[in-house]
Length: 417
Ligand code: SAH
Ligand code: SF4
Image 1: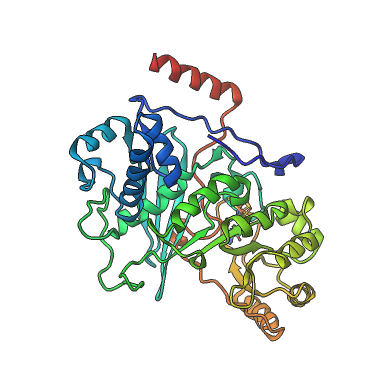
Image 2: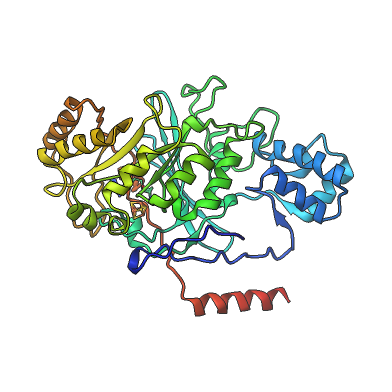
């Protein structure tokens, strides 16, 4: 499995190239989930289909996988019967395992998922009046230790694969019962509210934010490949305008994100002075505020119709003064950024050393930014009661030592004989 080559960054903000231990399935079959058409074609050819067949079948299978949500080859009715059996012997269409599903009193849902090799990660669905947003994870844990973020207290275990990233969207559609009629989507015990249908085709899942666990730009290749599958018009078909990628500020990858993925950009700014940002968003020591804003100014595709969102967590007596608000306006103006500011009330977690700013302070901050000509809504915290709100995600997965990983791999190999 390929990984984006992480940049060498000294100290604890190093993105640690975590190798994806490819866990071969014991039955030798290959999981097609997350593969693009071309990759499916290559897999079929490798297993012996001739070039013409492989091309034709890969198109059909792509459609079944991502448009219909089908996981059972027997139900892929436009494949000849013997072909269905041939596929089932060699391939599977996987989903992440659901360890736990929780529903908040405000309707937010959180799923604890488990990968084939036993790593836990989370995804969150946030239903709103006019949209339904799925918050997707890109890594198990995060290397970036932002001081106010619970995920940052986990040691990164590894990058999620494209299959695991797309798998989250697939699973959400399963659970919400959102595949076209006539397909048998797996899972799906939870029923979607009948009266909560947002998109013209009646689906609730309308938007995706890459704001779950992890720093998406430290897992660039996999996030890009996954989002390409999600945006493909023959499959899940989500518009790039409905997808937002949030980064803590991995400056060297931002232009590529714009060019190769092209989704909306959100930037976790959180502070306007070097001292404070160094403290709360440590990647700032490597890529400072001015470099970050310059990268935003040249982000391909940003304009007044598609603004860059600056996320700003409200921490009491840390980054919430009138002066901070005025400096924020000055910086955004200086770089002439088509921007909006999202003020996020700090979501507490056990052991956090910060407090949320008072509602009055947040209101005042918002007004100053607004008077500066920049929209600055306050994000309503969602799913706090089930620890599903921004920055509250954390699983029990811990980074294993190299020796331990080697031992586990050896055991697995021995078991496979
Ligand atoms: N790693 C990426 C995306 C995931 S975090 C990033 O940092 O941008 C999604 C958003 O939640 C980020 O803006 C993050 O800074 C914010 N966040 C983290 N912890 C938080 C907390 N405890 N309360 C409120 N927002 C938090
Ligand atoms: Fe990682 Fe984002 Fe949390 Fe920072 S805020 S530790 S980058 S997930």
